[in-house]
Image 1 (cartoon, rainbow, N blue to C red):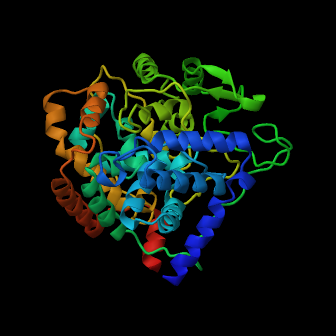
Image 2 (tube, one colour; image 1 turned 90 degrees about the vertical axis):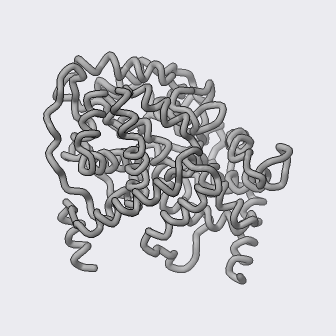
Length: 434
Protein backbone atom coordinates (compact mmCIF):
# COMPACT_ATOMS: atom_id res chain seq x y z
CA UNK A 1 0.00 0.00 0.00
CA UNK A 2 2.91 2.36 0.66
CA UNK A 3 4.12 1.66 -2.87
CA UNK A 4 0.69 2.40 -4.37
CA UNK A 5 0.37 5.58 -2.31
CA UNK A 6 3.75 6.74 -3.58
CA UNK A 7 2.86 5.91 -7.19
CA UNK A 8 -0.46 7.73 -6.75
CA UNK A 9 1.40 10.84 -5.61
CA UNK A 10 3.64 10.48 -8.65
CA UNK A 11 0.51 10.32 -10.82
CA UNK A 12 -0.94 13.47 -9.25
CA UNK A 13 2.34 15.27 -9.96
CA UNK A 14 2.27 14.15 -13.60
CA UNK A 15 -1.35 15.19 -13.87
CA UNK A 16 -0.38 18.71 -12.78
CA UNK A 17 2.25 18.92 -15.54
CA UNK A 18 0.05 18.66 -18.63
CA UNK A 19 0.86 22.21 -19.74
CA UNK A 20 4.60 21.65 -19.28
CA UNK A 21 4.60 18.39 -21.24
CA UNK A 22 2.45 19.32 -24.27
CA UNK A 23 1.95 22.49 -26.27
CA UNK A 24 -1.49 24.13 -25.98
CA UNK A 25 -2.76 22.96 -29.37
CA UNK A 26 -1.82 19.33 -28.80
CA UNK A 27 -3.18 19.33 -25.26
CA UNK A 28 -6.51 20.71 -26.42
CA UNK A 29 -6.66 18.12 -29.21
CA UNK A 30 -5.89 15.27 -26.81
CA UNK A 31 -8.39 16.44 -24.19
CA UNK A 32 -11.21 16.91 -26.68
CA UNK A 33 -10.55 13.53 -28.31
CA UNK A 34 -10.42 11.75 -24.96
CA UNK A 35 -13.57 13.51 -23.74
CA UNK A 36 -15.49 12.53 -26.86
CA UNK A 37 -14.71 8.85 -26.18
CA UNK A 38 -15.14 8.98 -22.40
CA UNK A 39 -18.66 10.37 -22.75
CA UNK A 40 -19.73 7.24 -24.65
CA UNK A 41 -17.75 4.54 -22.83
CA UNK A 42 -19.76 2.12 -20.64
CA UNK A 43 -22.32 4.80 -19.79
CA UNK A 44 -24.98 2.14 -19.18
CA UNK A 45 -22.98 0.82 -16.22
CA UNK A 46 -23.91 2.41 -12.87
CA UNK A 47 -20.31 3.45 -12.22
CA UNK A 48 -20.29 5.71 -15.27
CA UNK A 49 -23.97 6.70 -15.32
CA UNK A 50 -25.16 10.18 -14.42
CA UNK A 51 -24.17 13.66 -15.56
CA UNK A 52 -21.35 14.21 -18.04
CA UNK A 53 -19.30 16.05 -15.42
CA UNK A 54 -19.59 13.20 -12.90
CA UNK A 55 -16.48 12.32 -10.86
CA UNK A 56 -15.91 8.91 -12.45
CA UNK A 57 -16.09 10.23 -16.00
CA UNK A 58 -13.75 13.06 -15.02
CA UNK A 59 -11.33 10.55 -13.47
CA UNK A 60 -11.37 8.43 -16.65
CA UNK A 61 -10.75 11.53 -18.77
CA UNK A 62 -7.86 12.72 -16.59
CA UNK A 63 -6.28 9.28 -16.45
CA UNK A 64 -6.29 8.90 -20.24
CA UNK A 65 -5.14 12.47 -20.85
CA UNK A 66 -2.25 12.02 -18.43
CA UNK A 67 -1.24 8.81 -20.19
CA UNK A 68 -1.32 10.52 -23.60
CA UNK A 69 0.72 13.47 -22.38
CA UNK A 70 3.32 11.32 -20.61
CA UNK A 71 3.59 8.75 -23.42
CA UNK A 72 4.03 10.88 -26.55
CA UNK A 73 5.09 7.92 -28.71
CA UNK A 74 1.72 6.27 -28.01
CA UNK A 75 -0.46 9.27 -27.07
CA UNK A 76 -4.20 8.48 -27.18
CA UNK A 77 -6.08 6.29 -29.63
CA UNK A 78 -9.72 5.40 -29.75
CA UNK A 79 -10.30 2.20 -27.83
CA UNK A 80 -7.99 3.01 -24.93
CA UNK A 81 -10.98 4.25 -22.95
CA UNK A 82 -12.44 0.74 -23.21
CA UNK A 83 -9.27 -0.72 -21.71
CA UNK A 84 -9.10 1.82 -18.87
CA UNK A 85 -12.80 1.78 -17.98
CA UNK A 86 -12.98 -1.65 -16.26
CA UNK A 87 -9.73 -0.99 -14.40
CA UNK A 88 -11.03 2.27 -12.94
CA UNK A 89 -14.40 0.74 -12.08
CA UNK A 90 -12.74 -2.10 -10.16
CA UNK A 91 -9.95 -0.10 -8.49
CA UNK A 92 -12.26 2.86 -7.76
CA UNK A 93 -9.18 5.03 -7.34
CA UNK A 94 -7.81 7.24 -10.12
CA UNK A 95 -4.14 6.99 -9.13
CA UNK A 96 -4.21 3.23 -8.60
CA UNK A 97 -6.07 2.75 -11.89
CA UNK A 98 -3.44 4.81 -13.73
CA UNK A 99 -0.65 2.56 -12.42
CA UNK A 100 -2.56 -0.52 -13.59
CA UNK A 101 -3.34 1.07 -16.95
CA UNK A 102 0.36 1.81 -17.51
CA UNK A 103 1.03 -1.84 -16.71
CA UNK A 104 -1.46 -3.20 -19.23
CA UNK A 105 -0.41 -0.72 -21.90
CA UNK A 106 3.13 -2.06 -21.65
CA UNK A 107 1.71 -5.15 -23.32
CA UNK A 108 -0.98 -3.59 -25.52
CA UNK A 109 0.52 -0.28 -26.69
CA UNK A 110 1.73 -2.01 -29.88
CA UNK A 111 -1.93 -2.60 -30.84
CA UNK A 112 -2.21 1.14 -31.40
CA UNK A 113 1.08 1.64 -33.22
CA UNK A 114 0.54 3.22 -36.65
CA UNK A 115 2.72 0.63 -38.42
CA UNK A 116 0.05 -2.01 -37.73
CA UNK A 117 2.55 -4.83 -37.27
CA UNK A 118 1.16 -6.09 -33.96
CA UNK A 119 -2.40 -6.21 -35.26
CA UNK A 120 -1.28 -7.80 -38.53
CA UNK A 121 0.42 -10.56 -36.53
CA UNK A 122 -2.73 -11.17 -34.49
CA UNK A 123 -4.85 -11.37 -37.62
CA UNK A 124 -2.36 -13.82 -39.12
CA UNK A 125 -2.41 -15.99 -35.99
CA UNK A 126 -6.21 -16.00 -35.72
CA UNK A 127 -6.43 -17.00 -39.36
CA UNK A 128 -3.95 -19.83 -38.81
CA UNK A 129 -5.89 -21.01 -35.77
CA UNK A 130 -9.23 -21.05 -37.56
CA UNK A 131 -7.67 -22.85 -40.53
CA UNK A 132 -6.20 -25.45 -38.18
CA UNK A 133 -9.32 -25.92 -36.04
CA UNK A 134 -12.02 -25.97 -38.72
CA UNK A 135 -10.78 -26.29 -42.32
CA UNK A 136 -14.34 -26.50 -43.69
CA UNK A 137 -15.42 -23.24 -42.06
CA UNK A 138 -12.16 -21.60 -43.13
CA UNK A 139 -12.75 -22.71 -46.71
CA UNK A 140 -16.28 -21.30 -46.57
CA UNK A 141 -14.89 -17.92 -45.46
CA UNK A 142 -12.32 -18.06 -48.25
CA UNK A 143 -15.02 -18.62 -50.85
CA UNK A 144 -17.12 -15.85 -49.28
CA UNK A 145 -14.17 -13.45 -49.45
CA UNK A 146 -14.19 -13.07 -45.65
CA UNK A 147 -11.09 -15.04 -44.67
CA UNK A 148 -9.19 -11.81 -43.95
CA UNK A 149 -11.30 -11.73 -40.73
CA UNK A 150 -11.32 -7.92 -40.69
CA UNK A 151 -14.72 -8.09 -38.98
CA UNK A 152 -12.74 -9.30 -35.91
CA UNK A 153 -10.69 -6.09 -35.73
CA UNK A 154 -12.39 -4.79 -32.59
CA UNK A 155 -12.02 -8.20 -30.89
CA UNK A 156 -8.25 -8.26 -31.36
CA UNK A 157 -7.67 -4.58 -30.63
CA UNK A 158 -9.51 -4.58 -27.29
CA UNK A 159 -9.04 -8.25 -26.41
CA UNK A 160 -12.82 -8.83 -26.58
CA UNK A 161 -13.70 -6.32 -23.87
CA UNK A 162 -16.58 -4.96 -25.98
CA UNK A 163 -18.06 -8.32 -26.90
CA UNK A 164 -19.56 -9.11 -23.49
CA UNK A 165 -21.76 -7.29 -21.01
CA UNK A 166 -19.67 -5.24 -18.57
CA UNK A 167 -19.64 -7.69 -15.65
CA UNK A 168 -19.07 -10.63 -17.99
CA UNK A 169 -16.21 -8.68 -19.59
CA UNK A 170 -14.61 -8.27 -16.15
CA UNK A 171 -14.70 -12.03 -15.63
CA UNK A 172 -13.42 -12.70 -19.15
CA UNK A 173 -10.50 -10.32 -18.63
CA UNK A 174 -9.59 -11.91 -15.29
CA UNK A 175 -9.64 -15.39 -16.85
CA UNK A 176 -7.53 -14.19 -19.79
CA UNK A 177 -5.01 -12.37 -17.61
CA UNK A 178 -4.68 -15.42 -15.34
CA UNK A 179 -3.43 -17.36 -18.38
CA UNK A 180 -0.55 -14.92 -19.00
CA UNK A 181 2.92 -15.68 -17.62
CA UNK A 182 4.01 -13.33 -14.82
CA UNK A 183 5.82 -10.29 -16.16
CA UNK A 184 6.46 -7.95 -13.23
CA UNK A 185 8.51 -4.80 -13.77
CA UNK A 186 12.17 -5.04 -12.82
CA UNK A 187 11.77 -2.39 -10.13
CA UNK A 188 8.39 -0.65 -10.39
CA UNK A 189 5.84 0.33 -13.02
CA UNK A 190 7.10 3.24 -15.09
CA UNK A 191 4.50 6.00 -15.33
CA UNK A 192 6.30 8.00 -18.03
CA UNK A 193 7.10 6.68 -21.49
CA UNK A 194 10.09 7.55 -23.69
CA UNK A 195 10.02 10.99 -25.29
CA UNK A 196 8.93 11.52 -28.83
CA UNK A 197 11.36 12.81 -31.42
CA UNK A 198 12.07 16.55 -31.08
CA UNK A 199 12.08 18.80 -34.11
CA UNK A 200 12.81 22.49 -34.61
CA UNK A 201 9.09 23.12 -34.79
CA UNK A 202 6.45 21.00 -33.12
CA UNK A 203 3.01 20.19 -34.46
CA UNK A 204 1.77 23.69 -33.76
CA UNK A 205 5.00 25.40 -34.79
CA UNK A 206 6.47 25.69 -31.25
CA UNK A 207 10.23 25.25 -31.21
CA UNK A 208 11.52 22.39 -29.09
CA UNK A 209 8.15 20.72 -28.40
CA UNK A 210 7.93 16.96 -28.96
CA UNK A 211 6.41 16.14 -32.31
CA UNK A 212 2.91 14.79 -31.66
CA UNK A 213 1.72 14.14 -35.17
CA UNK A 214 -1.53 12.23 -35.12
CA UNK A 215 -1.90 8.65 -36.30
CA UNK A 216 -3.86 9.96 -39.26
CA UNK A 217 -0.78 11.72 -40.64
CA UNK A 218 1.45 10.11 -43.20
CA UNK A 219 3.98 11.63 -45.62
CA UNK A 220 2.83 12.96 -48.97
CA UNK A 221 3.68 10.76 -51.94
CA UNK A 222 5.18 7.34 -51.33
CA UNK A 223 2.96 4.32 -51.53
CA UNK A 224 3.65 2.17 -54.50
CA UNK A 225 1.58 -0.96 -54.00
CA UNK A 226 -1.70 -1.35 -55.83
CA UNK A 227 -3.54 -1.57 -52.54
CA UNK A 228 -1.96 1.60 -51.14
CA UNK A 229 -2.70 3.44 -54.40
CA UNK A 230 -6.33 2.43 -54.03
CA UNK A 231 -6.26 3.56 -50.40
CA UNK A 232 -4.93 6.94 -51.51
CA UNK A 233 -7.71 7.13 -54.10
CA UNK A 234 -10.36 6.45 -51.46
CA UNK A 235 -8.99 8.83 -48.83
CA UNK A 236 -9.60 12.57 -48.93
CA UNK A 237 -6.41 14.56 -48.49
CA UNK A 238 -6.29 17.73 -46.42
CA UNK A 239 -3.52 19.72 -44.84
CA UNK A 240 -2.66 19.00 -41.21
CA UNK A 241 -1.98 21.85 -38.77
CA UNK A 242 1.47 23.19 -39.47
CA UNK A 243 1.43 21.74 -42.99
CA UNK A 244 3.72 18.81 -42.14
CA UNK A 245 2.41 16.09 -44.43
CA UNK A 246 -1.08 15.06 -45.52
CA UNK A 247 -3.85 14.44 -43.06
CA UNK A 248 -5.90 11.63 -44.54
CA UNK A 249 -9.49 11.59 -43.42
CA UNK A 250 -11.15 8.25 -42.88
CA UNK A 251 -12.50 6.66 -46.04
CA UNK A 252 -15.96 5.21 -45.68
CA UNK A 253 -16.20 1.48 -45.20
CA UNK A 254 -18.51 1.50 -48.23
CA UNK A 255 -15.46 2.63 -50.20
CA UNK A 256 -13.36 -0.10 -48.61
CA UNK A 257 -15.99 -2.69 -49.41
CA UNK A 258 -16.17 -1.44 -53.00
CA UNK A 259 -12.39 -1.77 -53.17
CA UNK A 260 -12.63 -5.35 -51.85
CA UNK A 261 -15.31 -6.18 -54.41
CA UNK A 262 -13.61 -4.50 -57.36
CA UNK A 263 -10.23 -6.05 -56.70
CA UNK A 264 -11.50 -9.50 -55.77
CA UNK A 265 -11.73 -10.95 -59.26
CA UNK A 266 -8.81 -9.18 -60.96
CA UNK A 267 -5.99 -9.30 -58.46
CA UNK A 268 -2.54 -9.89 -59.76
CA UNK A 269 -1.56 -13.22 -58.16
CA UNK A 270 1.89 -11.75 -57.51
CA UNK A 271 0.42 -8.96 -55.39
CA UNK A 272 -0.76 -10.03 -51.94
CA UNK A 273 -4.05 -8.13 -51.45
CA UNK A 274 -5.48 -7.12 -49.14
CA UNK A 275 -2.59 -7.21 -46.69
CA UNK A 276 -3.48 -6.63 -43.01
CA UNK A 277 -0.29 -4.69 -42.37
CA UNK A 278 -1.06 -2.40 -45.29
CA UNK A 279 -4.67 -1.99 -44.19
CA UNK A 280 -4.02 -1.41 -40.53
CA UNK A 281 -1.03 0.85 -41.02
CA UNK A 282 -3.37 3.28 -42.76
CA UNK A 283 -5.68 4.53 -40.04
CA UNK A 284 -7.85 6.01 -42.77
CA UNK A 285 -9.07 2.47 -43.35
CA UNK A 286 -8.63 0.84 -39.97
CA UNK A 287 -10.49 3.50 -38.02
CA UNK A 288 -13.85 3.07 -39.79
CA UNK A 289 -13.88 -0.41 -38.27
CA UNK A 290 -13.83 1.38 -34.93
CA UNK A 291 -15.64 4.67 -35.22
CA UNK A 292 -19.37 5.18 -34.88
CA UNK A 293 -21.62 7.21 -32.59
CA UNK A 294 -20.73 4.45 -30.12
CA UNK A 295 -16.98 4.03 -30.74
CA UNK A 296 -15.69 0.60 -31.73
CA UNK A 297 -19.27 -0.58 -32.07
CA UNK A 298 -19.91 -0.72 -35.77
CA UNK A 299 -17.89 -2.06 -38.68
CA UNK A 300 -19.93 0.07 -41.06
CA UNK A 301 -19.76 3.60 -39.69
CA UNK A 302 -17.24 6.32 -40.21
CA UNK A 303 -16.80 9.71 -38.51
CA UNK A 304 -16.04 13.04 -40.07
CA UNK A 305 -13.01 13.80 -37.96
CA UNK A 306 -9.81 12.07 -36.83
CA UNK A 307 -10.07 10.12 -33.61
CA UNK A 308 -6.47 9.69 -32.63
CA UNK A 309 -3.67 11.88 -31.42
CA UNK A 310 -0.87 9.35 -31.50
CA UNK A 311 2.39 10.18 -33.27
CA UNK A 312 3.82 8.01 -36.02
CA UNK A 313 7.00 7.02 -34.27
CA UNK A 314 10.24 6.31 -36.04
CA UNK A 315 10.87 3.46 -33.62
CA UNK A 316 10.24 -0.08 -34.79
CA UNK A 317 7.61 -2.09 -33.00
CA UNK A 318 8.91 -4.85 -30.79
CA UNK A 319 9.99 -7.75 -32.99
CA UNK A 320 8.80 -10.31 -30.48
CA UNK A 321 6.11 -12.39 -32.14
CA UNK A 322 6.04 -10.21 -35.27
CA UNK A 323 5.87 -11.83 -38.68
CA UNK A 324 8.18 -10.27 -41.23
CA UNK A 325 6.42 -8.93 -44.29
CA UNK A 326 7.04 -11.41 -47.07
CA UNK A 327 7.21 -14.39 -44.74
CA UNK A 328 5.10 -17.42 -45.66
CA UNK A 329 2.70 -16.62 -42.84
CA UNK A 330 2.09 -13.06 -43.97
CA UNK A 331 1.73 -14.19 -47.59
CA UNK A 332 -0.87 -16.65 -46.44
CA UNK A 333 -2.80 -13.87 -44.75
CA UNK A 334 -3.02 -11.91 -47.97
CA UNK A 335 -3.33 -14.85 -50.35
CA UNK A 336 -5.25 -14.01 -53.51
CA UNK A 337 -8.62 -15.59 -53.96
CA UNK A 338 -11.05 -15.91 -56.82
CA UNK A 339 -14.61 -15.80 -55.45
CA UNK A 340 -15.88 -17.51 -58.57
CA UNK A 341 -13.97 -20.73 -58.08
CA UNK A 342 -14.25 -23.42 -55.45
CA UNK A 343 -11.02 -23.60 -53.50
CA UNK A 344 -9.13 -26.83 -52.85
CA UNK A 345 -9.17 -28.23 -49.28
CA UNK A 346 -6.80 -26.48 -46.92
CA UNK A 347 -3.86 -28.60 -45.76
CA UNK A 348 -3.24 -28.75 -42.01
CA UNK A 349 -0.64 -26.38 -40.59
CA UNK A 350 1.25 -26.08 -37.34
CA UNK A 351 0.60 -23.27 -34.89
CA UNK A 352 3.07 -20.92 -33.16
CA UNK A 353 4.08 -21.86 -29.59
CA UNK A 354 2.30 -20.18 -26.65
CA UNK A 355 4.98 -17.54 -26.04
CA UNK A 356 4.57 -16.32 -29.64
CA UNK A 357 0.92 -17.07 -30.36
CA UNK A 358 -1.24 -13.93 -30.27
CA UNK A 359 1.89 -11.95 -29.38
CA UNK A 360 2.01 -13.60 -25.98
CA UNK A 361 -1.72 -13.85 -25.27
CA UNK A 362 -2.75 -17.11 -26.93
CA UNK A 363 -5.92 -17.68 -24.87
CA UNK A 364 -7.46 -14.51 -26.32
CA UNK A 365 -7.19 -16.09 -29.78
CA UNK A 366 -9.04 -19.16 -28.53
CA UNK A 367 -11.80 -16.94 -27.17
CA UNK A 368 -12.09 -15.40 -30.66
CA UNK A 369 -12.13 -18.88 -32.19
CA UNK A 370 -14.82 -20.00 -29.75
CA UNK A 371 -17.05 -17.08 -30.73
CA UNK A 372 -16.58 -17.84 -34.42
CA UNK A 373 -17.39 -21.51 -33.90
CA UNK A 374 -20.47 -20.64 -31.81
CA UNK A 375 -21.90 -19.01 -34.94
CA UNK A 376 -20.39 -21.29 -37.55
CA UNK A 377 -23.53 -23.27 -38.38
CA UNK A 378 -25.71 -20.15 -38.63
CA UNK A 379 -23.18 -18.45 -40.91
CA UNK A 380 -22.77 -21.42 -43.25
CA UNK A 381 -26.44 -22.40 -43.27
CA UNK A 382 -27.49 -18.88 -44.26
CA UNK A 383 -24.60 -18.31 -46.65
CA UNK A 384 -23.52 -15.02 -45.07
CA UNK A 385 -21.08 -12.93 -47.09
CA UNK A 386 -18.52 -10.51 -45.62
CA UNK A 387 -20.95 -7.61 -45.10
CA UNK A 388 -23.57 -9.86 -43.54
CA UNK A 389 -20.93 -11.43 -41.28
CA UNK A 390 -19.77 -8.03 -40.05
CA UNK A 391 -23.34 -6.85 -39.41
CA UNK A 392 -24.16 -10.13 -37.66
CA UNK A 393 -21.32 -9.71 -35.16
CA UNK A 394 -21.96 -5.98 -34.75
CA UNK A 395 -25.47 -6.84 -33.56
CA UNK A 396 -23.94 -9.14 -30.93
CA UNK A 397 -21.78 -6.50 -29.21
CA UNK A 398 -22.07 -7.04 -25.42
CA UNK A 399 -24.44 -9.97 -26.03
CA UNK A 400 -22.19 -13.03 -26.35
CA UNK A 401 -22.82 -15.83 -23.84
CA UNK A 402 -19.70 -15.87 -21.68
CA UNK A 403 -20.27 -19.31 -20.13
CA UNK A 404 -20.51 -21.09 -23.47
CA UNK A 405 -17.62 -19.15 -25.01
CA UNK A 406 -15.34 -19.79 -22.01
CA UNK A 407 -16.11 -23.51 -21.89
CA UNK A 408 -15.38 -23.95 -25.57
CA UNK A 409 -12.26 -21.76 -25.47
CA UNK A 410 -10.81 -23.60 -22.46
CA UNK A 411 -11.31 -26.99 -24.12
CA UNK A 412 -9.72 -25.81 -27.37
CA UNK A 413 -6.83 -24.17 -25.51
CA UNK A 414 -6.20 -27.32 -23.46
CA UNK A 415 -6.08 -29.40 -26.65
CA UNK A 416 -3.60 -26.96 -28.17
CA UNK A 417 -1.32 -27.04 -25.10
CA UNK A 418 -1.39 -30.83 -24.87
CA UNK A 419 -0.99 -31.55 -28.58
CA UNK A 420 2.08 -29.31 -29.00
CA UNK A 421 1.21 -28.67 -32.66
CA UNK A 422 3.76 -25.86 -32.64
CA UNK A 423 5.65 -24.80 -35.71
CA UNK A 424 8.52 -22.50 -34.79
CA UNK A 425 12.21 -23.27 -34.39
CA UNK A 426 12.61 -20.27 -32.10
CA UNK A 427 9.59 -21.35 -30.07
CA UNK A 428 10.79 -24.94 -29.86
CA UNK A 429 14.16 -23.78 -28.50
CA UNK A 430 12.46 -21.51 -25.98
CA UNK A 431 10.14 -24.28 -24.88
CA UNK A 432 13.02 -26.73 -24.51
CA UNK A 433 15.04 -24.19 -22.51
CA UNK A 434 12.15 -23.58 -20.12
